[in-house]
Amino acid sequence: MAIYTGQTATVNAPVEKVYERMADFSSYEEQLNSLPADIRAKIGDVSFSADAITIQAQPVGEIKLQVVERVAPERVVMSAENSPVPMHLTVSLAPTAEGKTSLTPSIDVEVPAMLKPFVAPKMQQAADQFGTMLANLLGAGL
Image: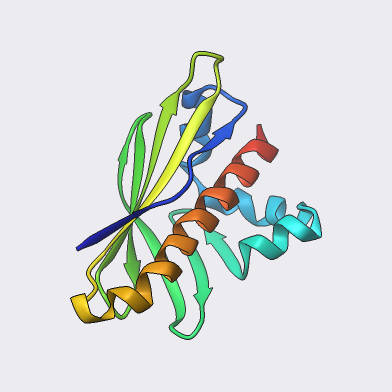
């Protein structure tokens, strides 16, 4: 397994509020549509339900990230359905001294060693994009 950690993002809200907003992803759909076009373009083709995030990942197709674990208020773990390889996405939350929350996504994926040079850049990009998307959506709703 390889772990790709995305850039840490900051949300201007206490960790408890951020975690509470991650309890139901379905409210993000409306917020996503109201984001500025440049930010929306960075996020890509994504949709939300209460316990899942669905991403169109080319050339793989649709990948559904289903919540499999929640540990209040420090992390949410999702498992990929329809993924060609086993994959988990963890969103770690931590309070900062200013009453804000740092959010760090990490993708744990099982990739054969000979494919890592080809897959690693895309997985790192996915981890970074996921962090950006969540920070923007969480920040907009608080």
